Amino acid sequence: MKTITIKLLFGACFASFSSLSAQTVDRAKYPDYTDKRNPDYALMQRHTLGVRNAMSVRPDHVNNAETRFFPPVFNQDGGSCGSASRIGYMFSYEMNAFRNLDGTNPQNYYPTHFVWLLTNGNSGKDAFVQHVGVPSAETYGGQTYSKLFGNQEETQNDFGWMTGYDKWYEAMFNRMLKPANFPESTGTDAGREALKNWLWNHNGDESFQSGGLAGVGVAAGTMTCKAIDSTPTNDKLGVTGMKCVDKWGTGVDHALTIVGYDDRIEFDINGNGIYGEETADERGAWILVNSWGNEWQNGGFVYCPYAYGGSHFNKDGSFSNHWWYPEIYKVRKNYKPQRTIKLKMDYTRRSELYLMAGVSADLKATNPDKTQALDHFKYAGDGNNGNTVPAPEIPMLGRWVDGKLHTEPMEFGYDLTDLSDGYDANEPLKYFFIINTKSTAEGSGHIYDASIIDYVQDSLGLEIPFDIDTNGVNIQNKGKQTIISLIVPGRGVAAPQNVAVDGGVLKWMSPKKTNLSLTGYEIIHEGEIVSTPDADAESYALPEGASGTYGIRAVYGNKRSNAVNVNVYASTANNKCIKLLHSGLTLPGVFDSKYNKATIYRRLEPECRSGVGNIHVSCQCKWFIYCGLGH
Image 1 (cartoon, rainbow, N blue to C red):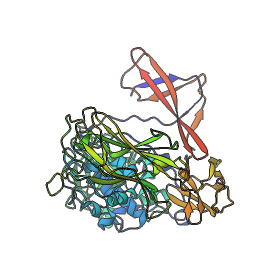
Image 2 (cartoon, rainbow, N blue to C red):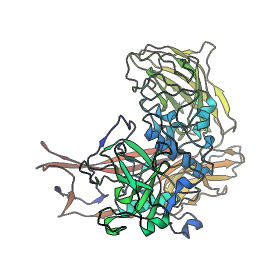
Image 3 (tube, one colour):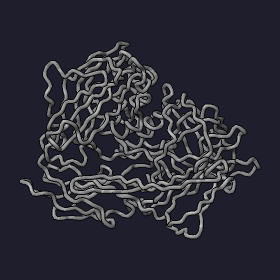
Image 4 (cartoon, rainbow, N blue to C red):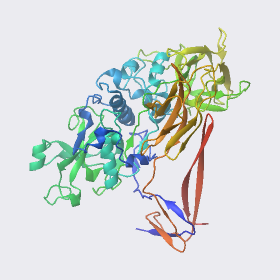
């Protein structure tokens, strides 16, 4: 293995470097595959958030597909394996495990194709779970295809879109945070331990009724499976004859979901006739569910030896050592949209449109201070990321299951709660709805109705309409922008001031005086109320190992202010700070070739987030190494 020795003349803090073997991906079979990872180091920390977990010991086997929260095994339609894994299984299960709901009820599992159809629409599953939400299979009309809006594929240009504000509003409640990955792979002891803890009990999070799931990418098209061999241990466990992975294929082309593990199963990986040798990594297996129906392998499931817990094999039949860094979904707990936009509009060539919402505290502003693109409406609907010119003459609703193009106006909604975050909703705010079109746009259409709905002042929704006449607002084409705006009155409920985290303590100052009587506060973590301090409180001690987004809102009887949020970062006890004066550092496996010169630099990337009365600035350090001619 080639190494490069780097002479560093300054002190620095280092995280681990890893080198991955090259892998090929068949995007025709797995179009929404991504090699981008979002490592969450909190997953490597074992939390004991309650007495139950503090006193318990992790079992030697877990299978979350045996719980009441797991949805029915199904056969995916088209190449939708990514959405099948992440939405059909992971999203559905995680929601039910948190809400304690029956996973076999169509009201409680979620359709793959609501998100899948936008894969070639500058959006997709990861954007939807964060910003749009997903309606239930019952509301959408099916676990994969919709019996209401059609059964087309993501590459077609006329697939049906869902209409009805109530359907879109339902979806807003079903949300996740940004998908995250384990920072350690399943090829390490630490990575395996962390994944097992997640599968067991969500890493100690007692707000869930059971453990979690995780998603991976594999080379399944040419994989081979075999029966688990008979040994006294395997016979006793009842797994003899069950199917396990013998070899993965050579190119990643499919998504699977890890539902559990079993530390007890024995294999003979090296073929020496001795089963369960720990030095040969021959004990234990992950339990995976597929989306090829319940006739596949073990009723839709398969065991994968820990030794093969990676994406693919080499062409010579050996394991590639390209281990998984499994992906997880974290529930946006108890989430409720506080402010939304409701729209009714039509347009004759939908893929020419890019829709946005905006907000400003300046009531005289002609443009917003802050904007948010509406995922699902980002030059979408032609099956080609909006690149078809001229755009196909397909209306917004597309072609439904009845075979007809539906030209009637589309009614939909979008959550503006995150857009409004950082603004004082107790004061008047100006909202904007913006329609951008391509320079080649030839379509036509109208905005017929638009309104902002506030669910804080009225749980059923206080609707404030835009001023639109009976003929509607004409939508401009040829690259022109269409903008409508509305001033929304303030709620008159003041929020806490100067919110900050100091030494593991969340601190704040009381809100500005109003004619309302302050009765207390609510501390929120990832959307869940975790504490209700009294009205005279000005601090809250964060639990040990706390991380993520914490917020606080003031309570005035049955009224609540908007939340003021701060980020709390997990401690990184394993990081080390070393001085390398008069010494050096060797990083093995960074390059495939030898270079005589190299340029190294580091960059600090600050991130600034503001709330009412506070500004938080965080930085991450990135190291860059360039080698070759001219360096």
